[in-house]
Length: 148
Image 1: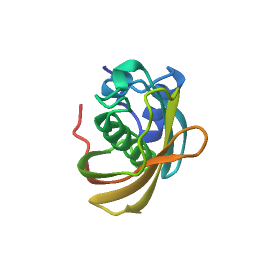
Image 2: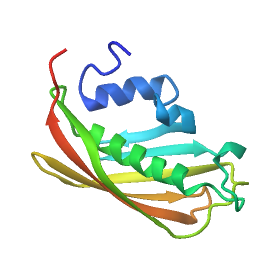
Image 3: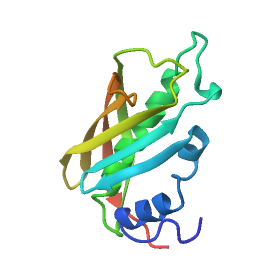
């Protein structure tokens, strides 16, 4: 992990994207960075049988994890090497069930507010055909990054 968190948020995302995945929990769930620019990010999640719930759809927890990950990536594009953040809350509104038979879900997020101490992001989770399955928001607390 040493060196993986050095640099600005964009530097970190660039390294993660170039490796073909995001690290840690995002890798466990199969998230991959597709795109990012200032205040925006797009991830995809390859759907596997492990993402299914008891009703045969994509588990809501997997989609909530996707909301947290994509909004966090959007915030990463707006922090410097001397900053860090933590999600303080997320809200997920499930709009339409996502069948476990989908090959992937796509999540897009954008920052709608970036203050000195707090940021807010909104996102949409959709299938490749454009069907929206969930919408979410996340609030994030910004703090100085401790010296290493």
